[in-house]
Amino acid sequence: MRESSIYQEIFAEGFEIGFKEGLEEARQEARQETIAEIARNLLLSGMSVEQIMNVTELTREQIEELTPRDSE
Image (cartoon, rainbow, N blue to C red; front, side, top):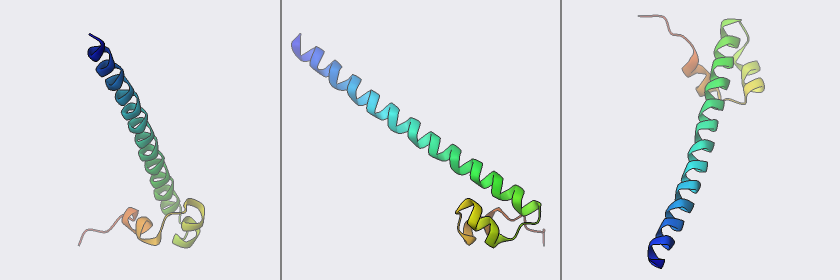
């Protein structure tokens, strides 16, 4: 019976660690999505890529990926 409770403790600890890591990953993804949305809005308002780079700390390539492209 003692082994069973040890396994349960190990499982519970692993679950807690995994949950915390998953939560942190979700926070980071949400933060990146928010920054991308802000950058997109700044582009639409006419702000230069260089200014957006300074404000958001995104790279030129990341900002250019957000730029709407005309259909060819």
